[in-house]
Length: 88
Image (cartoon, rainbow, N blue to C red; front, side, top):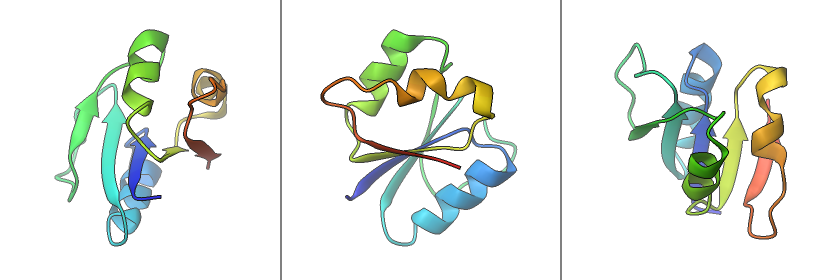
C-alpha cells in the first residue's frame, strides 16, 4: 500500500493524514478546504455524491475515513475493486 486517501480533514483526519504522509503518498478528501496548510494534496468533494466518491477512491490502495460514524456507509460499500478501508 502506497497511495492513501484520508476522508474527512477535521482535527483527527488532518493529524492522521500528516502522520501517514511520513511513510505513504497521501491525498485528503473533504467537503471544505482544510483550515490549516497540510503537507499533502487535498481534493474537495462530498461523500454524499456516491459517483464522485467511487471515482475518487478507485485510484488509491487504501482509504482511511475520519468522518462521523453516520457518514461512513457510502465509503464502506464494497465494490469489487474497492481499496482497503479503515474507519477511525
